[in-house]
Image 1 (tube, helix red, strand yellow):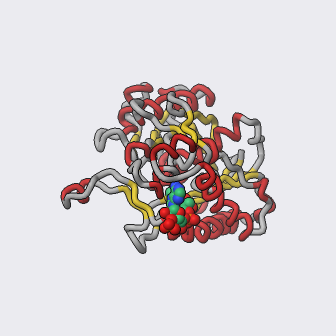
Image 2 (image 1 turned 135 degrees about the horizontal axis):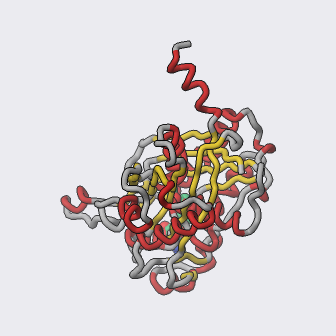
Length: 333
Ligand code: ACO
């Protein structure tokens, strides 16, 4: 084996540890299904039975960067890591306040992160946070001494890109931000898979500049719900199995599974398909709706606040989103 291959062979042994989590929800408070009934022809009964969602948050005048800053500050405070120790700041979002500068650059200024750190936004839709953990680990492997920590966020304001006359989409999403401070660790094994496949770009998308040039509205979510459902119930078990195979473990060895919180019925379908125990799968989407890239770190944050995450436990996170992107990782708490 040449020198590079020898060094690379040791990389998988370097795991990732989450040191602190934080979150932010719009200050206006939860918006119940009864409010959505006043906007479109829908009902609490329909939304609950088809999705499990009871309420969500909309940011109103609050901005995505305000949510991101609050979530990041909480994660930093809980981790005990100082802003000046951050070597990498990654923000997963498909709803930045501005197309440029990036939210990560705005966080640099707001939080006082080192000016010579790597920071950028990226869009992997609802799989974004898991893409972020994977990328942060790789960046930390090459980080300067003294910059051993990464800040990874999923921060979204889908309410800015919803058509509030389209009942197919507007009842599903909510705004939120969540953040994690992570470091490399040999005591916390981490395994991950990421992927992307685009058969049909129109199955789930948010329109943009090119759409506007063609006279269509820009910045609006479009979705073919049943196709997304079919994709989700196929890719979630597949990516969980892939990550388990990498780690040499079985589903029974896992303490918690945290799926992207899009829809109760998707998660129930996966539980059945995998012959899993329902209590292994954490669900909090009833309170927040689908918060895209924020959904997985928001779930981890809730679990941590509820005392559900104990040292040594194994947690699988699995996400999927527009693209389609997908990702799964196995974290050791
Ligand atoms: N209230 C009342 N009726 C509704 C609503 C609503 N909010 N939305 C759709 N309907 C109607 C439709 O118009 C349709 O009426 P019709 O039969 O008269 O045409 C009827 O309900 C059935 O529509 P379907 O799309 O077949 O409903 P379905 O049972 O598939 O449920 C849903 C729709 C919940 C979107 C489902 O397809 C689903 O869960 N898909 C997964 C997509 C998802 O979770 N996306 C989240 C974002 S994607 C992501 O996070 C990656």
